[in-house]
Each structure stands twice: as structure tokens, then as C-alpha cells.
Amino acid sequence: MGGRFYIVEFHPVYDLLAGYSYFTRSVPDIDEEGTYTENGAAAVAQLATWTHPHSSVLNALIGAGLRIECVNECPYSPYNCFDGMVEREPGRFYLNHKGNDVPMVYSVAARKVA
Figure 1 (cartoon, rainbow, N blue to C red):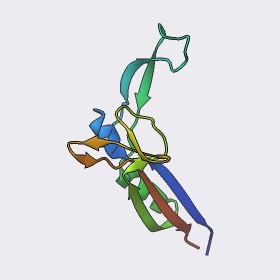
Figure 2: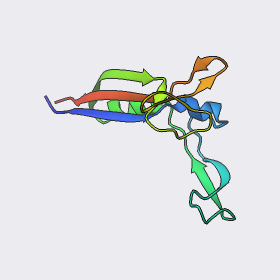
Figure 3: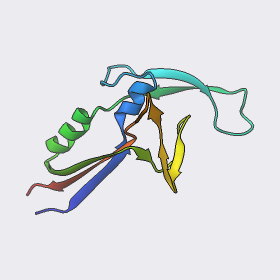
């Protein structure tokens, strides 16, 4: 049998809470925002976001001939990358929504079917 493959990605529920569609659309959600550089405060850029619900990701892996062995979800991110996150443990940043932890990251382990 082939080797094991892993994918780790931000959980699509965060996109939903941030105001984006959970389901894939034919056109992206577009936001305008400033730049991340310190001297670009006046710059505005467009950000295009395409969401990838779990079904799209898992079906793509299955369609590529991979057998899904394990799917895990985590209530934390390894990065402080969204507003309102709290580092409760070293390197684990949580986001609370209405008294509950938001799923932040998920992983999939799969193996190529021979």
C-alpha cells in the first residue's frame, strides 16, 4: 500500500463566523483591507476568499484515490491570527463565540489506495 498523507487546514467554521459563506460559490467573497506592512497604512488591497467546506476537501481526497484514515478537529490555532484569540496554553490560541470554543484547525490522514 502507498504512503500516508496528511493535510492540516484552518477550519471552515471560522469563515462562517467571519461573515463568509460556508459553502463554495462560483465567485469569491471580496473584502478590502489595508496592507500588513508598517508603512502601507494608506494602501488598500482586495482580498478574495473561496471557502472549502469539509465535504469538498474530503471528496477531493477520495476522488484522488486516497483512503481517509482519520479526521481530527482542534479548538485552537497554533497562531494568534484572528481578532479576539486568547493564548490559554503556550502556542495554542483559542477563539470563543457565545461561550463556546470555535473549531480552528482540522487534520486529515489518508493513504493512497493501491
